[in-house]
Image (cartoon, rainbow, N blue to C red; front, top):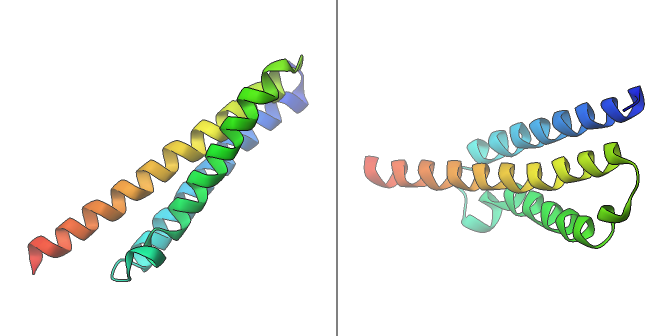
Length: 101
């Protein structure tokens, strides 16, 4: 592993963490909005994660560069996990709003 590969892996981690924070802030900001607007960021991250996962299955397994393959895998699984976390946060906050009223 060279330095560029390690930086790509760290960049993937940071990008996924920043996307989760972005989604968390957006779900909190749009807490009282309709579902279509409320889950917009989570749906976007899920779509990107799904596309990257399909691309990983079809293309990235053939790469010889393990750093690129690992960063691709981290991005796709990270986007799927962060979208699930954002969906769960929105669902739990919606249930708390129903319980409080």
